[in-house]
Structures are given as structure tokens and as C-alpha cells.
Length: 472
RNA sequence: GGCCUGGUGGCAGAGUGGUUAUGCAGAGGACUGCAAAUCCUUGGAUGCCGGUUCGAUUCCGACCCAGGCCUCCA
Image (spheres, rainbow, N blue to C red):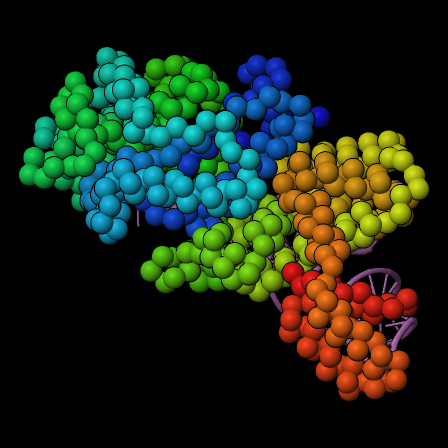
């Protein structure tokens, strides 16, 4: 099936053509591991995961690379300010290396909660210093660099004719020049490739290089690692929308002189998760992590479901109200699937119906990853009386592979919960209640039901008597 | 100042040049002693003003409003 995607480079919806038939290589700009990734960060990861799943279901062999930025780049793109990793280390009284490991572990934990398939490769910047140095050397030989004495090696963006193409703005249009720039840079958009360690303090992370002891600028890591694991040219590069102008423009500027243009065929940028009042903020306590949602009793799949109801190129406004709505919607679907699994099977999978639904669902997500439309089809499928339960179940297995919403898993767990037999004392209470009911003593019956409920079980009446179900 | 998105019912959010998805919430009903679950039915929206068109929510233009990026940020 044809895959269409919106390419930021051309600002157009394009049909995807791989560099090598049947294969796709793509790179996601991963997290800087100095703090917990919040649910907004994770939106990007879910989007990446959907891309991977759509390619996979279309028969592609996927090589997905996502980096961990564990080297301290600076808090300002002007290559000044504090080092984030060092700040994190000071905050937590850990070494920078331990800080990195701690937040990598946390990140992967949350990735798993969201059922994101792990990338094929997850390289760390600090493990690829030599590759980064090698690229800086190549750029130096090609004449793209200059030194600011006592500061570092910089990239001269005026040497790269097409600088800023991705951001839709020419060099001359960027406002950078309006700020005071006493750093010695030739152009406001120039950026560091290699920074010298300060002479007055000892950095925890620093390496030898042909230019002196120091550390790499933060853009070069993505160029170095993507090429190492995906080849000099690859198909797709994705990341948060804020990366387009600076980070990705710089990556292109670093890479194309070395490998030729176009370096990457397609670029995709994801919109942000916003709060009513704007961005998530750590200081305001609104930078929720996936683990925070779990602590509040939410299923991570409900959050994933919320995300998939919107489009990746559209900002999404998060609130607990909308998460509650998503939770209800998600649970309703799970309930219906559980009923399908419980339904008596009298027929076999209807391959004609299966194929029709399969193709319909796959085609809407293959068209620029419209997951919201796929979820509409999921509702339609549940209502479709012409498709038998077995076929529907098989289709939901496909939907789970495609969207990663773990419908079958949650439905199976729900059934298990419902089949778990109640302990004797609960059964005794239920029996008493049944007697009270038979005597039309509603007050006693309701009191007993409340007692059972308080013990963690629910009594459900039916035509044939009652069921005792463990509360989720 | 430059660039870029959007403005759709109570909420979240799709698609579409010609009956405005879907979900949640709401209302009514079936079933229930009452609940729960399920099923059925149902009310309710396209910022404002022009233009193109037989017809615009959809295309074009102006305006108003909101948000984002241009500074680390997914």
C-alpha cells in the first residue's frame, strides 16, 4: 500500500519512496536525559512508534534509530549558559553518568508503559565521540569551520548556500542578529561543533580532540549517529516541531557537505501537547510523566488512545477531563471486545470481510498517519453486524499491531478478572443478599451489596441469578 | 519584527465543493426492585465579512481572535 506523508522539506504531502525497496531507515531525535520525560515528550515517541508500525504493517523492514543525548550541551543555542547534564548532576548529587543512566532507565520504563516498540538502535552520544570528531574534521577539511580562540570550533553557516531551507526562513530573515552577539561568531546562526572545556573548572564529561580537550556541540551527535546506524543517506528523519529551524537545519548543514544532498529524503515534525495555559512546565508541576498518570489510576493505553484521536501535525490540548473521556472511550471498546471473546463461536474467520476491513484501516493510517480515522473505523467495525465475532477478533489483533493499543490484552485481562472466583465469605454475603432479594427485602440486599463492594467485589444481577466480579 | 499553524456542538477532536465524523458527557427508552453492563433513539457546531460557484464548513481575499516557532525544549 502506498504510504503518504507530509514532508516538512517540501511542505507537501508526498508519496513515500524508499531508497532501497522494501526497507526504511528512520531517525528520531531522542531525549536529553537530564530529567524525566513528560507526557508531551512522549507524544513524539508515540508518533514515532506509529510510523514504525505503519511501515511494518505495509511490509517494510524497519531500521529505527533514536538517540539519547547524554552529553551536556548547553542551555542556550548561542552555545553559552549552563550544561544541562551537569546541572542535573548537581541537583541530584549524582555523577553526570549516573544521572544519564537514571533517566534513560526511566524513559525506557515509560516507553514500555505506552507500548512503544523499542527502536532498533538507541545510541548514546557519549559512546560516539570519535565519530563526531571525525565529522568535524571532515567539515574542517572542507572549509566550513573556524575557531573562536578559547571557545571552540564553529560552523560557518554562510558557507552553506541552502542554510535554513527546512525552517522556511532564509539566514537573513532570522532574528538572531537582533540579539547582542559578543561571542565572536561570524554569523548569528553559526553554531559550535566542538567546545573547549573551561580553564577554571573541571567538567565531568570531556574528551581529547585534535583541537583540545572539550566536548561536542549538540547538533553533531545526531549527524554522526544517524549515519553510523542508517548509512550516509537515509529515508526519514523525525522529531518535535521546534527542531526544524535550528537543530535540523544545522544537521543538514553539517551533513550535506560531507555526503551530498539530499542527505535525508523526508522530514516529519510533530506538534506539541499543550495545556490550556500553554506548555508543560516543570516549575508549575504540570510536566506529568506517564508514571504520574499511572499513580493517578490511569491506564497508559487511555493516554495513548487520547493521542491517537488527534493528528500528529496538530497541537493537542491535554487536560484530565479529556483524559477521563479517553479512558471511558477506551474502556468501552475493551468491554465490547471482551464480549466478542466471550461470545459463542459458531463460525470461522470470514476472510473476505477480514481483508476488506484490514485494507480500509491500513489505508487510512497509511495516508499521513491518520490514526483518528482509524479509530472511527474501529467503532464502525464493532457495530458491523455483517462481520462475525471471530473475524472481528482477528481484526483487533491487527489493529493492536498497527496502533499498539493493547485492546486484546486488556479485554483478556478483564475477562480473567471477571472469572476469578470470589472467596467464600464474599460468596456467603452474596447468598444472603440473594435470599434478601427473594424476600423483597431491598434494604438488606442493598446493604449487603455495599458490603461486598467495600470488600473489592461487585455483584451483578442477571436473569439467571447473579455474578460476582472482582473490581478492577 | 519575521515565519507558521489554527479558530468546528458542553469537552476532545476528524473529514468533506452538495445529508457536518467519532468518542466522552447530556436527554429519552428497553432491561432491572434499584444498580451495573449492554442495546435502541435523540438534541446540539463549522469566528466575522466579502469573493468564486447552481451550491462553501471546505477554495480565494480582508478582518478579528488564539496558539506556536524565531532562545534548551518532544
